[in-house]
Image 1: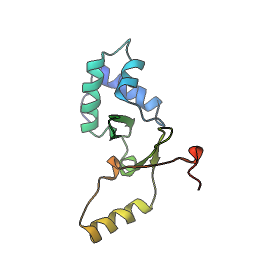
Image 2 (image 1 turned 120 degrees about the vertical axis):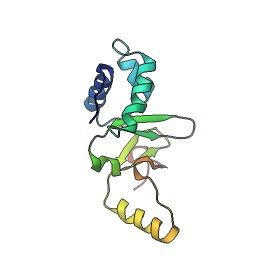
Image 3 (image 1 turned 180 degrees about the horizontal axis):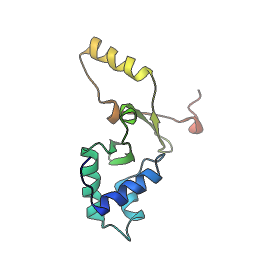
Image 4 (image 1 turned 180 degrees about the vertical axis):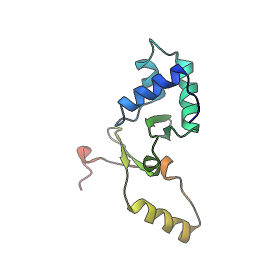
Length: 130
């Protein structure tokens, strides 16, 4: 692991304390505004994502990206479920992802990045009906 600045450590600490959330750079910058400048937050998030200490998930649809603390490798293998109604994002860690990945690679000649894949639909609370 490489050296992290004091600001990066604050960001990592904040993301670690909010492990179950997918936070935007704006939300993180707002929460840490007394300690870290907005530009530093954006730059640090990009650096930490490149190191794979945190995970950057592109939400798409003009909504930008969100970030989550994900230093361990098993979280790197999760897809994300995004509710189109309420905006809730859920980590999908399922044994069937590897089966799906193998099928897509073998039958369709395409390897998808599970950590960056976002499936859109409706969550249970919004009436997914399942």
